[in-house]
Length: 85
Figure 1: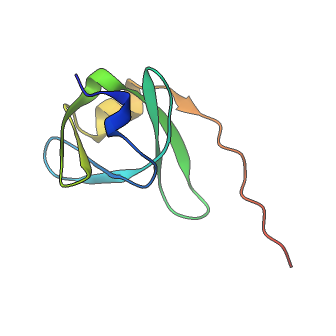
Figure 2 (figure 1 turned 180 degrees about the vertical axis):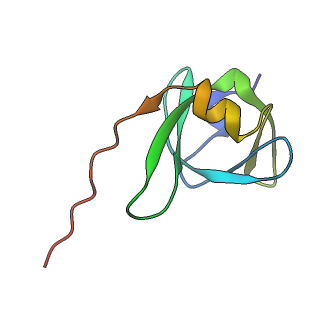
């Protein structure tokens, strides 16, 4: 299993087939948050640390594909980013 200290904000996250899922936006003791999507449709997903297959060249590779991300790990509410005018 990957250690929490090996993960940090901004790391790209990939499926087991090499499909890009998003980026790490937060790391907690037992999981990390992957933000997936574009500006308007951004969603964050909590992924358990044990779902990480490996970390190579500062990139995270999971044991599963995007279907598992959407059905397994829980979707979380991400606070809206504020913009100033």
